[in-house]
Figure 1 (cartoon, rainbow, N blue to C red):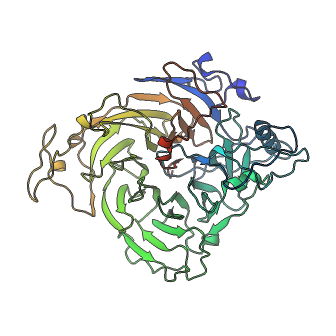
Figure 2: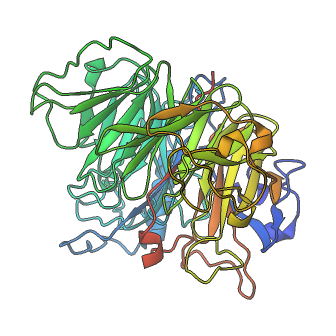
Length: 548
């Protein structure tokens, strides 16, 4: 899947050939109404690793932006090596002696798909001594990093480098990492969360991992150790926006636990027995010293993905039972939700303004939910297999505006096991929605189309709806459908300069956005801006779905 010219570190221009020589039949570009997206480069795991059949987890990708380390001066290099040479040296050290014969047991995956933003993970190793010593504790590590899991290992790549191989590998001996999340605003340095197949959860400092050349986690805080709270598999993990270090972990038994970072958890960590597995309940810890601090029983069966709205007001979950559920997080109240047309829902994502939610799953469809109307307002057909990742493109600019400053069109993307990336445009003018609220028992006014039972009234708060008739909801067709990988896809991320697509085999492709008058940015310019616009966006991750 890697360009042959890149195996030794070089990178040929995607425009030099329309077909990827390592992936016959796959083009290195695709066309959209605004122009041509070009394959810029790829990231992957070391090519020497043998591939084994997958289990129940797939590769999930998270972008992380490490800010400049505060109140510390950059170290003086002990040699003339530059930061970029440090990165190359670290990669060579990781890929060299002793690693060539190491094998991984590959597993398949799970995960949440979120719209990601300018906050990503990245590391540039610099100033190494000739004796292969560890980086000093003053190492800054500022930059953008790509983190992904495969088998029993977490890999970290320098996102702004065109080197395909990772610069860091973290090995887990007893279980496999299946989900992770990054918080660029973390206060105490622990900014990276990692959830394991065993149910264990770790919080670590990404910068500290980059400073260390070992293959184990360093300085980690361990939660749910040895299944003390839950023995079921982690499926999705997320920092709670404005949560002051709080985070949520979803599990395959239908429970979601809320933790507070830094709590030692010495108190009683047990919760009451769940009497009715089909009912939503919230239980709080019995002691102020306990961690987790709360348990949310969401559904009977696995929670496949969770996503918070950008302001942290709402929490969306999708699960094995095929339902989307939306909660008011602070009130711990179910607001709305509904069922897929068929099978499980695997992924969900919020629009940046919090008005719409995307879902995808085993019915091969993408649904668009409106928070204002608490209903499905559109559905998209185009995938020929399960939809494993969805995300809104918060950087895309609508070609037209209604003059009010509000969005009149949204761009979003989806990926699936059919190996395709689909891009969609959601126009407000094409959606049948009530123009105004009506008194109880009255009939709403519609902007277009004919009235139907789906629009007769607003569902009461807390109602889970059946799937509406497809005839009652506007159908969307993709503006782009492009086969981007040779293996089933697990997720996508939108950045200001590119689209990232990931497959379950641990390969990530970076597709540069169209440029009207300038060439793609050089390596020194970077691919992910950290402008004020990006800081408005939530850190995100590319995640797969729970494959059964």
